[in-house]
Image (cartoon, rainbow, N blue to C red; front, side):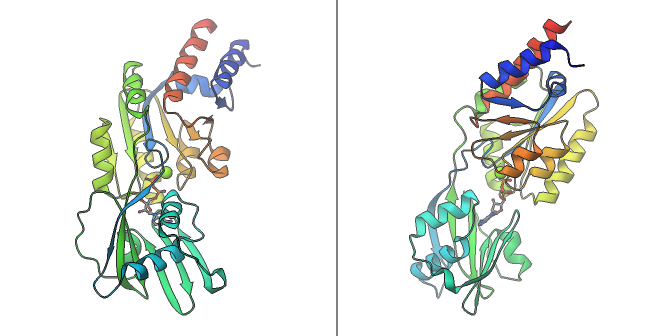
Length: 287
Ligand code: ADP
Ligand code: MG
């Protein structure tokens, strides 16, 4: 049987817009001491803006944007949506064939007889596209046409308003370690890690790298529960692996809501703190 106070805890949480899938997760939160976060859409707003375009030698701005718009036309990723909005191109869908999204890397599509790639360094090197060293401060999306670099776009995203305060509060509640795993480039990931004073940051993570990093962190944590917080874009497997997986519900995908144990309907990191508080309160009235 389920102790009556669990219902109280779950009910209180639901009034705050936090859906908890079972009383056992209140116990897990009570014992939580390591929190691992995704970056995009979780600690950051996930609302990217194009801040720079850089056509490669031999390509015009118009050619770069046309290729980028074709590459991202079918993408639901926040990066793809931002590029589509910025490029303002009329994409002829009858010309697009064999669209594929490569998780943690980008997209590939055929336009008539040309192959367009839109994504990060890892995607382009997989296709033997030559890239020069790039020190842009931001999320860089390279565009290639028939395996030739057509240029790149730089995108920016901002940390959520409550992210820093929520992380500080978790530390006050006894959390010993905070970590961020990101598919974005290490330069961007480290900069946000510094800004938010996270204990550890792992950038350039493919979806399988996030799984491996999470497994290591969980195995290292011998004296408490390890929680993962994500938005479900490329991180549903980690949500499912955690002692408790917390998903952003408003931005998050159906896969995330399915894989998660706790769902934050307002996408507000401060609601993580509220959930831990409720777990502690529920525990107190049980004893
Ligand atoms: P995060 O781990 O920060 O939440 P994701 O795993 O969703 O990020 O994406 C990781 C990286 O994959 C992005 O930073 C980007 O470089 C690349 N990427 C993913 N989807 C796209 C896309 N539609 N277009 C271009 N690049 C993409
Ligand atoms: Mg994400």
